[in-house]
Length: 199
Image (cartoon, rainbow, N blue to C red; front, side, top):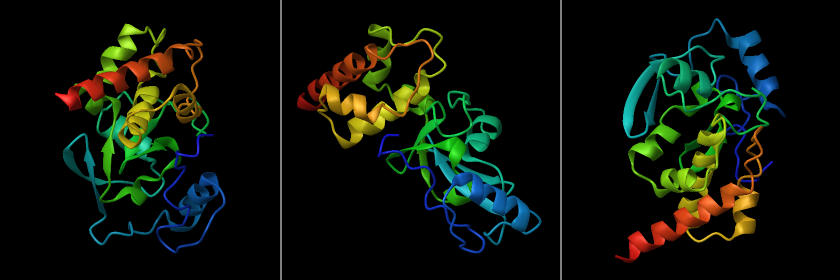
């Protein structure tokens, strides 16, 4: 798994601060011990900024960030493939880091800023065109996760080499086997960004 990925913000229970080694352990604890309790916030709401838009949402303690973004906000670019944090298809960018939304409780994300593939496309990021130009998708199911991971890389490192790109994308799986095309697309997007910034 790529070290840039953040499985959960801290694996601490937002109710009682108990520490857990795994997300599944944390989620099971919240459901078993705290499900009937009000949310940690006094008004029971969380606030998220998703693709530049502010949302106040009432969420259940066991809901994942994936459920909120995909099912409640209707941003279907966030995909569910493995539901175990192993494939990267649910990747979003939260406060500048790629995270696995299926492995993050929504109640841990109050006040966070999130980007999805839809927001990246709406902003006209060159990754979208470069992914099309290099035919980096076949079925396309995994593509949004790759794009969000690549965007987080370019935000952090605007001139990555091929090895750095491959390492950054190592947590994203593609059943169609489009892996050789992704570094080409990211390198092209990096060149485009550099040209845009030099104007």
